[in-house]
Amino acid sequence: MGNYIIKRLLSMIPILVGISFLSFILINLSPSDPAEVALRVNEVTPTAGAVAEMRTELGLDKSFIERYIGWFTNSLHGDFGNSYITNKPVSNEMKLAIPATLHLALVSLLIILVVSITAAVLCTVYEGTIIDRLIRGIVFLSEAIPSFWIGLLLMWLFAVKLNLLPTSGMESPGSVILPAVTLSLAYISTYVRLLRNNMVQNKLENYVLYARARGLKERKILQHIFKNSLQSSIAALGMSIPKLIAGTVIVENIFAWPGVGRLCITAIFNHDYPIIQAYVLLMAVLFVGFNLLVDIITMLLDPRIRKEA
Image 1 (tube, rainbow, N blue to C red):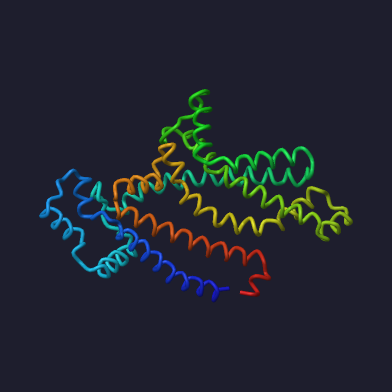
Image 2 (image 1 turned 90 degrees about the vertical axis):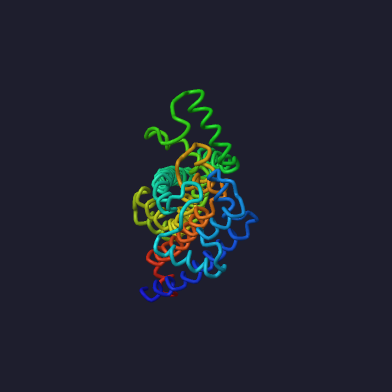
């Protein structure tokens, strides 16, 4: 197990280096001159002398390889450069925005777990009945509607018509409800179907028949079925967590949530390249790290996979 983890950690190094190199290339392929952009966003006339001076200040007068190595080395120490807009360290901008995104992602994850498990268990218990069909119909409908449209509908209903919840910012504890529900709906449909199908399949296994023959209560049998159906759901959930964090871009902009997603969109519109590069690199680290974590948890849950590894 320890050797497997070490090998996976070592294999992550070239992946992250490759992702950082690609993101650095894509940013530098932009037709806009970063020095000119930095001057314009700060309302400075981009004369030839000012552009040359800014290029020197930003280190753009160096070769591509020198700039990449310098940026990557500094990134390992948490230094992503300064923002073109505020001239503040990008790491500070990220530190201010990340807590809001994590708060939104955590609340969304709790909603996903509670609703998905409850709905999947009900569908399994009442398989083939009107309750099962109704829940699956609602799940299918929620998955078919785009998240931005759901967000606008929830905003219109609960904020405009009923005046129950705020529509933007982090004004109160209730501000997270609408964006969290909007963000979680697409994931709920996935996990309800996945968990429900696994539980229905496990109901047909021999251990369920033997458990009933032993006289175990249905509630205890259902607990065994639920536990044995979790493996694929846990693997999918592990990869959904970084998606929740990285996929808050649309929701954060709809509800004016001051998180990383909104910061990245603002940086894209303002051509604030240091923030965009930092965002891409951090999201890559997040996905690769959770991929490793999911593999480790799966191995701990299933001895067969651990033996193969």
